[in-house]
Length: 566
Ligand code: ADP
Ligand code: XUL
Image (cartoon, rainbow, N blue to C red; front, side, top):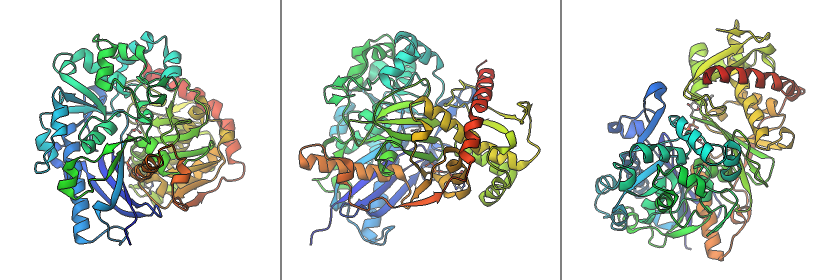
């Protein structure tokens, strides 16, 4: 009997690159592999996969060459596991059985291919590692990434050129954000016009960059990750459907004076594609070097948050996901796009007719870890115990923990920590360590509620929350989340929702290609693909306590953010 087709999902994230192989018949995870940049590629000298520089560490990049080496190392590990007959599930697998591959990239990052690089991509030599043969393929050695917050001036200019923040948000799904690719490009186009921008024939996102390596040709940007650029038109019709066109005024504003057409040519003059699009076959490099099938199809890559939406199985409005990793994100499926002043609306990666609402908080696990390290010696069990010592509402104690400059709400280039007692008086420390532990969580989840409402996600319409990311292993943290929103919190047995979602999207894209028409995502997924477990149920009355607290929380947040913005 022929083996069931396998689907490969890759995730090029901030700290490493991961692979998830799923069985197409059951959607069960057959194998996983991972590469960690800091540990596995120490010669790039990154911390958390990043290089930070400038005042407050606001300029943040990753070496593009590191991503090349990491992809080879990941495939070498997969091929080695195949050869030794080992896998994380115990079931042997063959890379040759992978019918389609797709991927997930950290959002917003950008790669600058130099003139002539298309040919280098087309002629990739399977005998030479990617890092060696593409060493000269870039107009810039380092890629700005999502953690960068150095483009405040470019954001102001973009909003001014597009008729203000509200107009930009209505068109692209978000007002101008420092990390969004358009503003990153604008900075480089203006300051490095001759040394980089004019020498560059193509600008890729991290997602379309990695996809280009698999294709051996420049891959288009997909509409979901494209919604994180400030350069897209969220709803206008484009060559490949609604939401696939660039937004001309934004292109012109971010081109450093070179003109919107010049920038469109570098981004892909044909516009974007829906994320379920199959772009072509896998290039020979991966066939000959790692034993992949020459028949393997490449489905467009997307951003990590859109891929997580697919991996967590969000299927109807009111399904909300909360991911608590390096950054915290909250996202939800939405029937309509109602972009607001803060937060983002993206295209849905598995349904070209709907949208994805998203909030991104920069201070996620590192802020919680800071509290845990200071007060609990880094013991999450102790953290949970302290959390249980105080009731929802924290007897009025409120804190804001922006250990690095925050994105939601935007604190500009400044970060800081501010605590208030029940009388709204700023205090240096709470009397009770348990208050600090509760405040760092309640503050985050209240911000999710507050900003969620700003993009049309009414708390009353939330049905359930699916939690993922490192901190979702902590049931006590999930209890606070359930209490703030008043709904059950579920977790999924499978981890790594972004690479899992990329594997599911490979399966989905392949199903659409084979059917010659769009197949609804839930129909493409094998039954039972997603097994949820209820991890927390809201305590009686807790949600109402938080509802009452929200106006005060908003007021204190506004006051503190105003002081940071100066
Ligand atoms: P990434 O964004 O890099 O994928 P992860 O989702 O793997 O990050 O999350 C890593 C974080 O999870 C760590 O920084 C750690 O603080 C946090 N974490 C791990 N276990 C726990 C726990 N039991 N309670 C709270 N936080 C945890
Ligand atoms: C989303 C964001 C981060 C990155 C890295 O807008 O900036 O979540 O995608 O994970």
